Length: 187
Image 1 (spheres, rainbow, N blue to C red):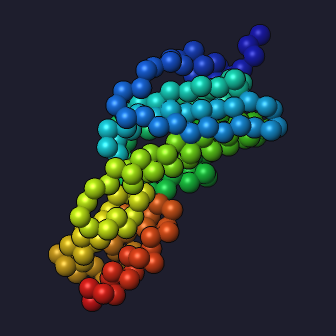
Image 2: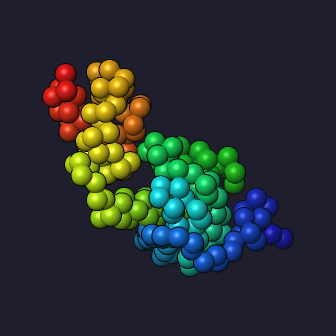
């Protein structure tokens, strides 16, 4: 008799401990409900996620969820994720491993670890930024000069259009006020 549903067992069997390539960051989370921890390490080339790996003492649902998250990020430009919110992630996980129901906590700690890895990646990008123009959007690495150029080239008069064009303001949202100030100044 199998301990886990077949889809979960298959993902557990594919787990590999790959060495990170390129620049890597990690995020960690823990569950007070079951006592497990999850650490997701992602490797990047610029904003492109090259690969990832998992460290956990968690159950098969934690392993399977992390495997789904990591595999869905390989080769993806973080700018294309557009926030990658919790409900969207849960839907992606459930589409591959089935309904989580009473195992939702397993997915939530994996998602928290993933978000912390993205926070570490953004912090690295900000620390490495050496542009001559002020960095406005740290989530997507958009500086003031790029925003002004986009407005001048495209006649973009609203924050939503600038966000659609450059992604500035589509991550955490903390830069939206600065983008609006730049729009008002250029107008």
